[in-house]
Length: 232
Ligand code: C5P
Image (tube, rainbow, N blue to C red; front, side):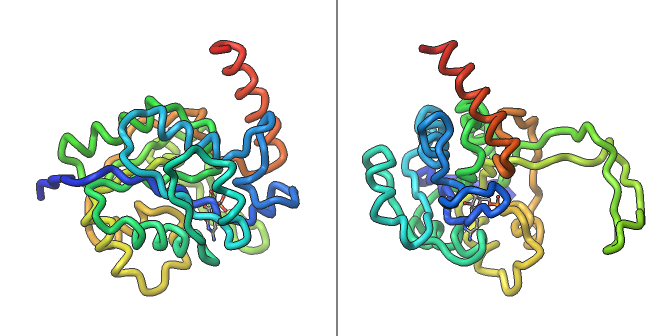
């Protein structure tokens, strides 16, 4: 099937998570990296890519008002839901005319704009769903509830998946419309796979890592400072 991707490129930024693993009192997306909230860094990366027509940021209900001051002008701000899937769904509903959606976690605050632009280039070339993915360095095993190893997976076939994940607009709307449970789905491509579409993985970037733990926050601050030193 050829995908037309006619219509605007809409980036949806789910930023409504509580982020308890980070151990901060603010929701994760609002935790600053060297003074700049993660969600702002993520949005600036999307804008710098030069391929996005509209950005929709989905935040916790109590942050809708204050987010307007944190974010660049012209960004739409919506209230998120209890699960990530609910927050993305709210973003899709607010921009039903998109030809392409990019779904990009606020927690991947340091994602290089060049990676974002590459995802859109692949979609424009006719792919329906494109995700950035990295080879895994560690051996990955499955374990049972008691920690007993149940299998050793073939590392060469495994990838750690990042965002932004890019989709033909009609395909992502259809994938979300088909969701009835969704509890075991941890990324948007997973929903698209369920409706039978082919998802293409392209090389991701280590800088697009998800900031989840206090360790990640320390690493992100060091990387951000190093980048600022190069450009400033
Ligand atoms: O919790 P996790 O790190 O997987 O969250 C990934 C992204 O999804 C984060 O940017 C988080 O703010 C967002 N999220 C959301 N709504 C939720 C849960 C998570 O927008 N209910």
